Image 1: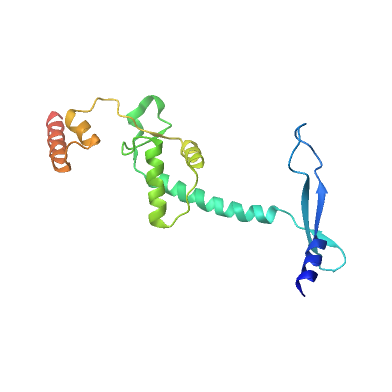
Image 2 (image 1 turned 180 degrees about the vertical axis):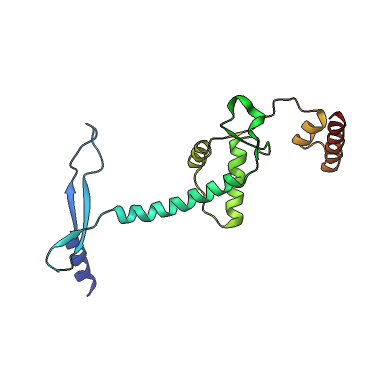
Length: 174
């Protein structure tokens, strides 16, 4: 088949219909809908092609993205529920992340390292809420050393020594 014959063949398989239902009274750029069909096996009539094949293909990709995001959220360490007794149905992430933006940034880095597709931030936050997760905010004030390390003013070795002394003092109190 040459190019002109191909065009005629494809034009015979595609029909344009006017929009059946207007959603607004104003003018719209959309004037019609294309319907696609393929020859049936008997060769006589045309069989309409559904968009469901395309939708299924897209859903498969979306499900893969969602499962990768869910795996990331499941792998993050969580605090036991006794840290928040009044709202024990929620799971709290360890206070590694300061905000959802910080968590989403780590998620994008995780996906880049593992070659996983990335879901948009809106979908990520919806999945986060659907899993009944929340960021744990410390209820106690932080000491000067801890807050200085969080900001970046105190080096890691001094901070680690501080944590060891703090843990040793907590063990002696028990």
